[in-house]
Length: 90
Image 1 (tube, rainbow, N blue to C red):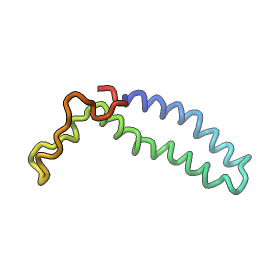
Image 2 (cartoon, rainbow, N blue to C red):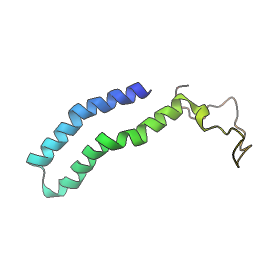
Image 3 (cartoon, rainbow, N blue to C red):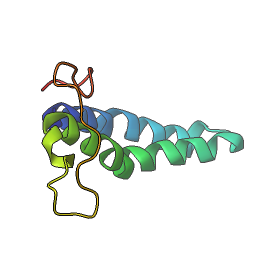
Image 4 (cartoon, rainbow, N blue to C red):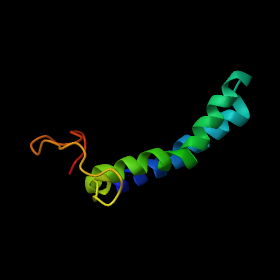
């Protein structure tokens, strides 16, 4: 799962970022500046902040289960027949 996100990030790094910067420097109107700057900065720095933790959770859902050592132990019992997140591949 993380390798898929890494591949997507690299593909975006060689397509979205150069095209966005080229459009920003040569063709963009003034009202497009903020959008293009945000897209480029998010792709370079922000994708890992949102994509990688979600992929890691789907890969290993036991990371968030309570160990019983903290102040909140017990918690809600989940049904063993239903997956926590149906979209994740376990």
